[in-house]
Image 1 (spheres, rainbow, N blue to C red):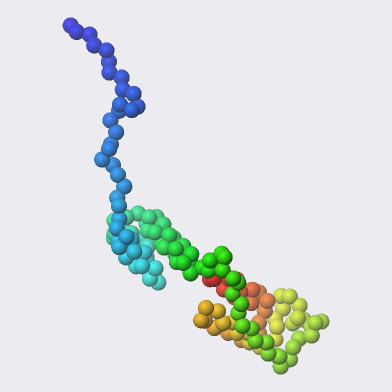
Image 2 (tube, rainbow, N blue to C red):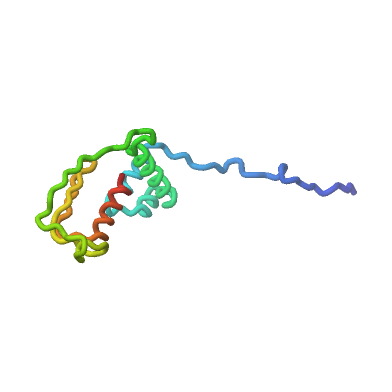
Length: 144
């Protein structure tokens, strides 16, 4: 009878799965899925399922795509500030400093405000309040 020592493997000697690797998707495949997912009403989960990928991966590709679009359209940090033309017109009846319409949070009578930015014109007409105007300006700032 031959007596042998039991085999003990260290971590580096253990069998590992060398055949497991990440799938590599072509840029065209990613682009097609991202464009399809950006169509209004499209289901990202359904598109991912049809393509055989995890929905989180498609969401990641979308975020990367949208971030690259924002960075491409953003002016360089060293660029000079952009000055916009402003035209002021006297309103038919301006509120006085003590009136309720001149206080923050209250509506400012009837009138109109036009803002031209990036080839788009935004017109605000009628009774305007400070909260609505702040909302519009905040949306414009986030868009830029």
